[in-house]
Length: 135
Image 1 (cartoon, rainbow, N blue to C red):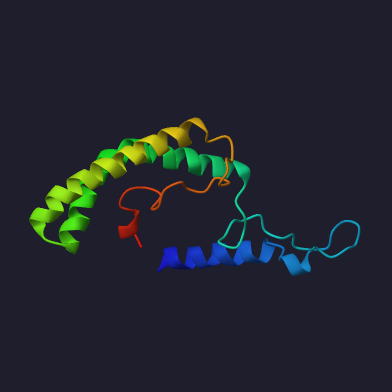
Image 2 (image 1 turned 180 degrees about the vertical axis):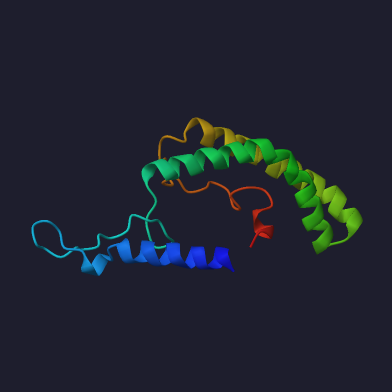
């Protein structure tokens, strides 16, 4: 019981000593005005540095995860057709898509600082392997 009373007492003392924003008057006599927040959200644009970092991270992920394109394509082809056809066709599709991911990822790593013709947007969809399963 004593700890609860102590917590309530501390909260009451601190609440009474804190000036609320609407009660605060600046030294010049003008009321306090809240400034707009600098937070980011889905309706705010991204800075140039954020776009560059995303392009670099996307390129690095594509280089590292390009071998994962083989089992990804095998699974997708097996799901669309039959398991045997999926293994054979998916393997070759995975090698082709993995090679393109490796090339595009390498390109994005070396050119991450520049916007390019697509203004930092991905050259291949989905951006990284297995991204279609995240939504």
